[in-house]
Amino acid sequence: MELFQNFPLWASLFAIVFAQFIKIPLAYIATRKLDWTLFTSTGGMPSSHSAAVTSLSTSVAVEHGMDSTLFAVSAVFGIIVMFDATGVRRHAGYHATVLNQLVSDFNKLVKEVKTWPKKEENEKRKELKELLGHQPIEVFFGALLGILLTLVLHAIVH
Image (cartoon, rainbow, N blue to C red; front, side, top):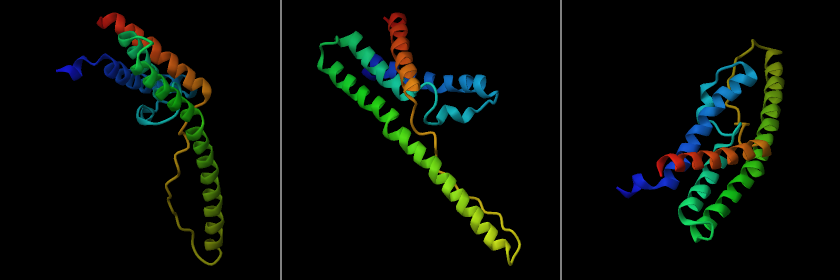
């Protein structure tokens, strides 16, 4: 089946999985806390989005050449994804942080007002996800990881 022989696809998927997995030991080194939820989370070091798109572009370049239309498409796609990761998604994460703090402060105020005449009630709310985008260094190392993984995989497979 041709799908199973699609090196750019499998290299990119491997880069995503590897980048997501490597976040766990890297975070453990930094925080001394083992957090398995990082495997399925967005944001963090390294950027799996960057690893995926640079792996895709690298594998297309290796298989079809840097002068191919496929490489042009994958390269432009990669640039847009990495720009978005450091721009819009990163700033959305900043906004989520501020909104979470505003909601927390408002809930404290409401709780205080409620306790004046009555007992305290416990309320739970779902916070907005704050780790959405990437710092430029996270995108850089994700991109570097994608390129290196693809070159190693290509050398092994071909």
